[in-house]
Structure formats: structure tokens, C-alpha cells
Amino acid sequence: MSILSEEAIRMSNERTLGGSVAVEAFQLFRLLGFTSLAESLGAVGEERDQMEYLAGTAIGRSLVRQERVQGENLSQLLDSFKQFYKQMELGLIYSELCNSGEIVVGIEECAGCHGTELAHRAVCYVEAGMICGMVSEFTGEDYAAREVKCIGGLGDTACEFVLAK
Ligand SMILES: [Zn+2]
Image (cartoon, rainbow, N blue to C red; front, side, top):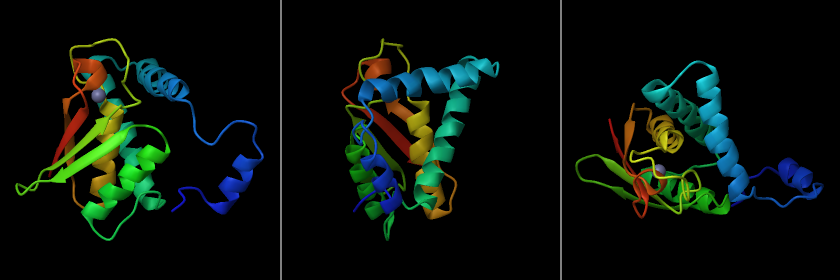
């Protein structure tokens, strides 16, 4: 399964650079881009986190709308997300659908925060929002995600998100 349209593949073949963005470049835009955008709008602290989360939500919803991530059911959707994430070299996804109705999604080697300075708090608001937006768009229900483990922020071995309605 290709995540790119034929047109996008043709265009990327005409480029000199490779198909995947370097992790360092992604981190630069992910961390500096989103954070400075929020800060330039006057958002700091929790408000900035919330803005990053909302931006992530929009990304997650469009991943489903554009069928870059898809499936017949939730478990296939998460599988498709895992493939997408690996293909983009953004991290290694694991997930679990709990009997309680909660969904656990983890990112090992998370490109968003891997190697960043320890913040002593979870920092992956973009990723939390993205996973939440993706699942909400797919199920048509409103989920919320919170990050319970964070590699860069808390020194954990993975970034882990718990989603609940
Ligand atoms: Zn994290």
C-alpha cells in the first residue's frame, strides 16, 4: 500500500532529495514550528500545549479523510497507522484495545521528542492530538487522549497515550 498518490510519487521522483524527511528536519519543524507558532499567537504554558493538541487533532482527522490511514475496523486502522508511521520513519507504533473501551497507543523511538532535553512533563501534544483526531474521525465519536509516558519529556522508553471517550 502506498501512502502517496501516483502524482505525488511522480513529483517526488523529480526531486533530488529522498522520499522521507530526515528525523532532525522533522524535529526542527515539529518542535520549533508548532511551538513557535503557538507562542507567536501569544499562547504559553497549558494554552500552548492545548494549541499543539488541536493542531495535531486536525492532522489526525485529515489522515483519515485523505485515506492515508484506513481500515475496516479500529484494529485495522491502528495497524494502518503503524505502517504509515514506520514508512514516514516517525516512530514504531504499538496499540491495544482495552476491554474498558480505552485505547492505548504507544510510540517507540518517537521522532517528536526523542533526544530532546528532559522537560519532566509529557511534551507530545501534537502526537496526542493526532492519534485522538484519527480515532475520533474514524469512529465518529469524540475521544480525548492524554500522554501517560514520554520519552523526551519524562525519560520513558516509549511515548504512550490513553484514549477514552
Ligand atoms: Zn512524548
